[in-house]
Length: 267
Image (cartoon, rainbow, N blue to C red; front, side, top):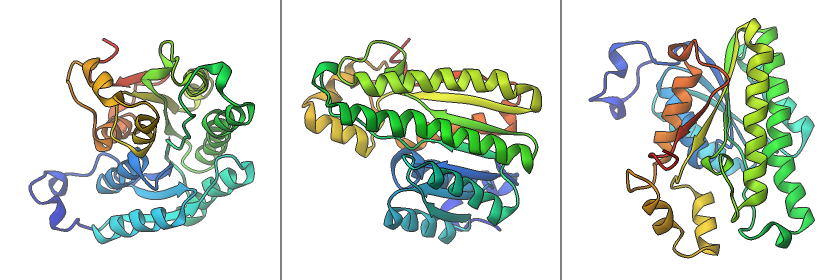
């Protein structure tokens, strides 16, 4: 189906999309990077299943994608609930008969501060969503890809905060670093079957998560911008572009990498 006038001026209608023919599953798709990814993947030809906890947000993004001529559905999913995660992945197969690609983007943030001031319950929640939830999703996605498409790709959303000390967000950084390890291990495990697994590590990106952090840490944007050679924050769509490339056949020999998308902050 052709896109409407929103795509006029691009070359998208002149050639097959980057993800043409693929069935995609995206977590945390109600807002921020996940919503931007869902929109982009659909524009690039994928049939997308959006997953997140908030139905109203999912419905709004799904309707927007459909209005632009894309194929999208949504499922309410709580990454802290194992059965919810497995059911969401199964929904993609139920809708389209296969799963080709997945973007594990959903995450939660911690209250900024030293590790000894973080309540144990908060630490457990960050672990459950940001690490265990990703592990659960990856296991379900590998099974679904293996049983249907046979080969495919998975991208996990990490953070540049996982690549060095993270004193303001120590639990968040620790879980994201563990996601990097899961990514690399999965790439080695499933590479022989033709399932690629990579991660992206975004820098400062204009999302609600960053805005929530700034409310607790006034001046955060100024500090992060000063540390970024491009001297600005990323738009969520710019992060989504990196995920789309890694999930596409254009990245067919890329697996086990953690790709920094940080405006040069870690250079």
